[in-house]
Amino acid sequence: MKIVIVGCGRVGAAMAELYDATGHDVVIVDSSTSAFDRLPDGFRGRAVRGDGTDEDVLRKAGTEGADVFLALTEGDNRNTMAAQLAAEALGVGKSIAKLNDPVRASAYADLGIATLCRTGLMLDAVNAYLGLPVSGLPGMQAPTGHHPGAAHDEGATGHEPIVAVTAIPSGQEA
Amino acid sequence: MFVLVVGGGKVGYYLAKELIEAGHEVALMEKDPGRARAIADEIGSIVIGHDGCEGKYLGEAGANRADVVAAVTGDDEDNLVICQMAKHHFDVPRTIARVNNPKNEALFRHLGVDELISPTRMILGSIEQDIPVHELLHLAALGENELELIEAHLQAGSPAIGKAPRDLSIPDGCSLFAVIRDGVATPLRPDTIMLEGDKVIAIGKQECTDLLHDQLIGDPEITQTAGA
Image (cartoon, rainbow over all chains, first blue to last red; front, side):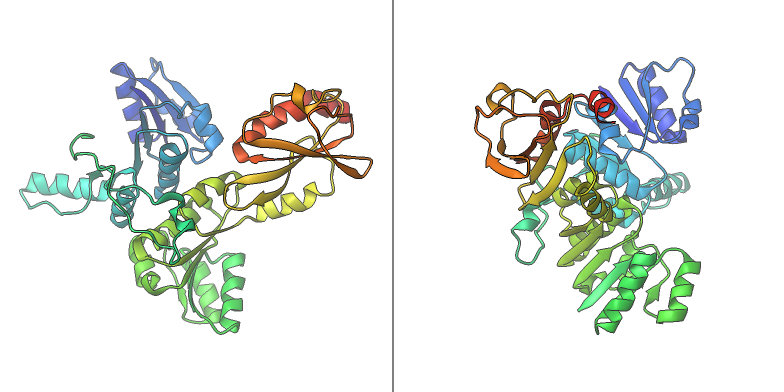
């Protein structure tokens, strides 16, 4: 698969290393060159310095034509915007944003991007270890809808209902 | 009207003040606690010292009954998320975003933000009217179909000089329709030969602009050297 990762922090670098080692075509984007020091010496993928919310940077990284896009920076909103650029403007089928706010994580799954919420993942990992019931907070969520797009231009009230049409069976991403 | 302003920088601060003066109900969200306190000291308890991007706090600030949410922080990604959360999660009828990077305008519009205010675009537009530049001038955006009215000033180095429109490969959905020569505007016919100094007026979709640039402006380095 062709995988574009934005954010070369611990998680981004670890994913880039793993996917590269398992034969995928990886491009990693970060605004700081020193972040690329986290990549292993034998990394065969491409590292692109730039702002992951800039469409031109994402194009340069080859996001058009990528199978998977992962936005893993520190900023929830940066991740959301990058993932939406990839999904809506650059046609990536599986676009995933790391979102630590559970409310935003669910809201954006409804708007057509897959979301990864550390809060829920960690709580349930701890709960599983302690034998406690699951929290019910979102962890990894497949898209449950798609964003209404330019439909707001027609709506007299400005609001269009969100229709679930692109739901992917959960577990497929795991 | 109840207006929720997110971002307590200069823009948000003056916006809130003006709205209060005009008699509207206003809440202002500012995530920096120090800044929030400073504003609250002056304009009162309508200031909420929390991050307006966070769903929980947006709800507590009354987003679900807001008539308008204006996202005016300095960060485009924050403004996008504030408007999307307001619109899709809290059913706010009207969302307004400040957009700093003009390249983000199309995405914001596509993602459902109702109104965009781009200070960069406004200043750029104002400057481009006066200063010769070796780029396409975006004169106006037409309607909601992302059509743009574009002017190309043909200078030495332009591949269009000495050619007629029919000799160029003009992208689909794009039309060169007028030429301004010596201050006189005339229709540009398929066989009109274009000259150095001509201003060619075109209309077309935003995505045509790169192709138009290649055809009418040419290699930026050549034109810059020639123009400078």
